[in-house]
Length: 402
Image: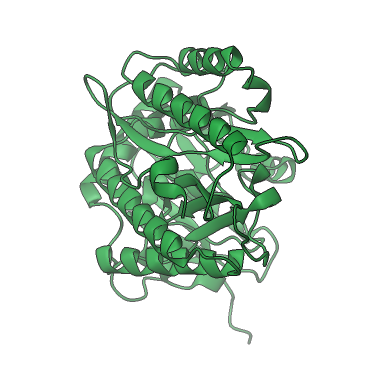
């Protein structure tokens, strides 16, 4: 007789690992979530995104095409993980975990419904759940109602706890270490990829020294030169550096799902007058922006003031994106606190505990004097009376003509 193969099971393999935050931190987050659920009449919340699952449980999944979830009710918090990960989701989460098997299609949903039951009022993430998975949610859970929790949960994540700010502060220091390593590696004839690797290696060593019990993944560098500086997210190439090149230093340490960044304009050896004028204008806009970040200021209001600064200098047409964004659980392939970006269409008012960047960028196309992409980026923690800049690496021509 064949051994029965379950749709899901508990796999408590080994002891619980150290998480990025203390249990009390996760309980406080869950209490905030449960208050939101009660307010909206939601009995069970299903999260499917990397950022919300990590925020409420500490577990950061690696999907590889498989669904993952976190089910939160008034009494429990359960990560739903794939069998390929064995006991790691349980070890790395606050609360409980269920492992679903792939012996039959949709065992993920059978694991979810074992926690939620059927006919409940269900909360979900409308900005993450695919159309296909939304249909399966309805088929398996037969919810009495569906409520989108993505907006209120984002609002909860936008205001950081003291523990989160301490981790972000450490991340900013790690980014500074990567910046100095990059500066040391820059010289004529060296490839972009070689400089990027020097910065990444320095940051990973620093993270491992500061957080010896963490998981290490996803720290990266985008180091760009010449034409490659025109976009903020252009990947690294094998282009050799040349004298008088404009350079863009971009360090991104990842610590337990939390992203920080350092971005600087640099020049190799010398900078021509036209480029220097654009660079100095961008630095001046950066300094203006730093002075505007304070409690009570709105994202759109800050944007309007920097826009006016650039417009007065006939440079606004070269601006390519917003002037900053929130920090927390996010990276280049998951997470975004879109309600806290410094753009014209966002009216969010800054409050103490928010963490935002200031990062004006001007891009001048090839063929005109000063061509290239210019960007400075600092991280600020909004306090009761102003904001603290936690980025230490210097900006501007005085330090960054290498």
